[in-house]
Length: 143
Image 1 (cartoon, rainbow, N blue to C red):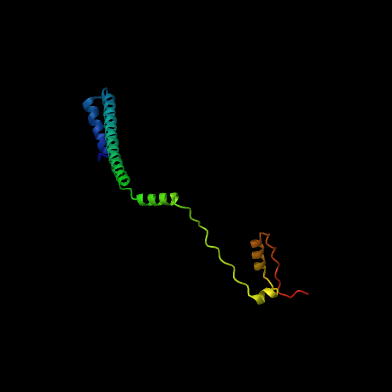
Image 2 (image 1 turned 45 degrees about the horizontal axis):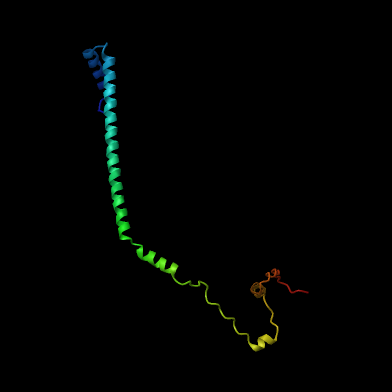
């Protein structure tokens, strides 16, 4: 706490107290002043804590009220009902419809076609075989 007293003012107060009270009782007076100051600070701290507790309790009461309103309003009740309907309803497959194989023209089936590495790997995976190792590509023709 700052009372607006400078060092010169405090020295003047101490000199007056020394003259009025006397050097014998001055330590007792200072001890009493310290005890009163400690009590005043303790009371101020207790008041501040009780005020903070009341503010915190008020905030908690408001939160409880909002929570009760949300529970009573049940904004997600429709979603809950839809989930229950889906869970108790008939099973639905999430797999997409199988894509039919394209028809092979008669002329293409008669002659063997050269396959690329990607097509060979795809056919091996469809047949359940391990995919062939990729061949290194070179810029020059093979001898």
